[in-house]
Length: 185
Image (cartoon, rainbow, N blue to C red; front, side, top):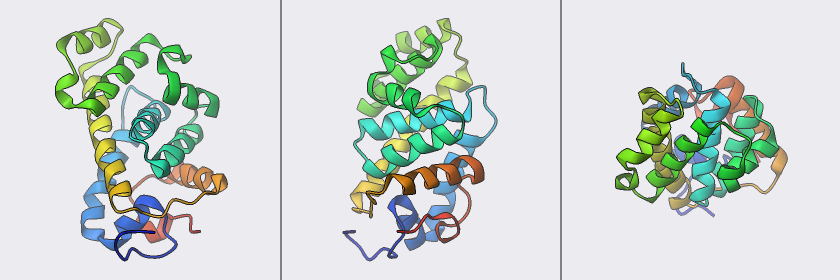
């Protein structure tokens, strides 16, 4: 049960966004750019970073919806779960693994990322933009996860709802107001 009077039937962050649309607008624009905008990382890879962070932060709503978004953006659910739970063994590139290592360090604290971490990523072919965006996705999802859980937003149990939410995120994006895109309970 939410800690404040959020709109009923809107799960997770969509309920919080509907409660305060003026803060929702910039909070929606950031993932639209980071997860769907132009990048040498695929949208599926960027969604996997979001899913990885949300899993590490134990945010049920986000660690269930963003794997679905990664899937609908082109990644197999099995690969997404491998990245979420054991990325060193996942069937992803060495470059992507170094970026996930950086993301994991951001989750622990920004100062945990060392010059050696970014150098390893560069040695595997990561660009400065990819390193930048990985750090920003990781930091943003620490905030989004804490926003969702800090308000005790509604997190449905139905996996089909998360699959539908993931399809909306992957194909329609993040910019529409919550009431327009939310998969309601």
